[in-house]
Amino acid sequence: MLGVLLIRKESGMTSHDVVNAIRRRIGTRRVGHAGTLDPLATGLLVVAVGPATRFLQFLPLEPKVYVATVRFGTATDTYDAEGSVTEEGAIPDDLESRVEAAIPGFMGLIQQLPPIYSAIKVKGKPMYKYAREGQEVHREPRTVHIGRYEPEWIEPGLMEATVECSGGTYIRSLAHDLGQTIGVPAHLEGLVRTHVGRFRLEDASSLEEIGPDKLVALEEALKPMPLFTLSSEQVVAVRHGRSIAMIDPPQDVRAVGLLEPDGTVFSVARVFGNMLRPECVIPEEAKALADLPE
Image 1: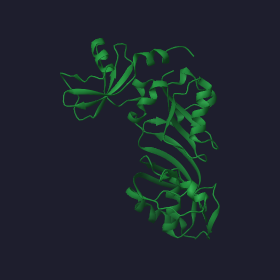
Image 2: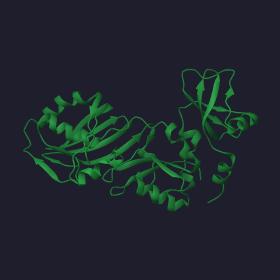
Image 3: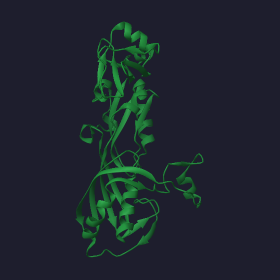
Image 4: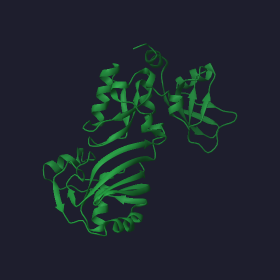
């Protein structure tokens, strides 16, 4: 099997749990995911299968869109509903107006401090392990981009917000930091990822539904990357790691997908003037193995 699966992740599973379940179901270890979801979170997980794992870095995976449920009145050490309560506070009558006034400060490029309970490594060790051991660790802020932050109120003290953001954004931190900004403790109660780039949750399948018919072909998954069909001779050259020249090279793009004469993607190449330099390639033998029936 070779291609991309759109998985509808359930709550309680780690992203690695999903990968392991797919490995067992389809009988291959060549499975990788793009963009971790916390166990509490549900929604869209983009997964590559077989030689397609080589192309994860080239898929259009941004921006990401989430529907976040934020509970005001309590803060937790993990910034979500799985943590221990660290602070409690009353819900003010003007909560909604405070939130509306604060949200512009979270738009555009912002500096975000990741939660201490996160998988980011410090000196080779995930931060959540330091936290569990009660150790303080220095956290470096990250630059992230928030394109949309649109709140709707479910009930007093409970907000559902649509958030469009760059990869690497911690929605847990957005919820916690919003509470700190307005002076009302808050944490993330639920999270659903609805979009990863142009991939949509409504097109995703459960783990029980996956199979060859659910695979998105690379030539479809890589769009809107330009795709070029090569001659058999050019394919051989690229598979041997050689750059190839183009008479009419693409303009204003950094990478292109390369197709075999039958229309299947076998490489992504970087564009240098009129030259295409192979960046990743599916060897002929790997493609042949991927094409074998399960």
